[in-house]
Amino acid sequence: MVQKLKKLESSLSMTRKLLRMGKSLDFIMAALKSVHIKDTALRLTITMSKLNQACFLLFDHIIYAHNVGLINTDKKKWSEISARFWVVSLILNLARNAYDLMNIIQEELRQRQSREAKHGQQVNGDSNHNRTTYSQDTNIVVKIIMQNKPVVLDLVKNLADLVLPLSTLGKVNASAGTQGFLGLISSAAGIATVWDSSLKLVP
Image (cartoon, rainbow, N blue to C red):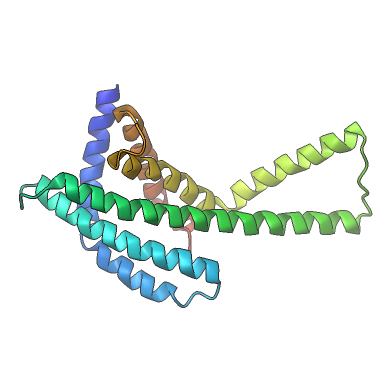
């Protein structure tokens, strides 16, 4: 089973590398556009992430060319350089995800407080109130997930991806099966955004 997962991930990885040919230029153009985002946190995280993605893909093209026999180079060296840029890009993406979720949660809490104030609800220490509060908090989490699928899907994809370059750099010891499984999750998340454009996180 582990070997099958690894082979499937290897095939998906080669397919992704082929489909990403030339994408480094697209990310540079996207970075130039993102510098006009008004929100400072989003502008910095998105722009720097795009630039690092461009560098990651540029070196990834070298690795692909080596794998298909177009050139003969030090694959390990270029893999590590590419992985470093990928890690930085993913960390910036996760910082953006955390910022988005923080804003979403704060807005939802403000709305809940406004509703409670409107209905004259008062905080007390009885068990019924505690159970109600716990239920409301659970509902908030579910609501955030259901109403902000692009953010949650992007978070899952970034977390799944993060283990892969860290494993290449020797920072984590992930088995072949684990890497294959996480690669499948990342690929599925990427396919979902292509299949349904409403799931793609913007800007």
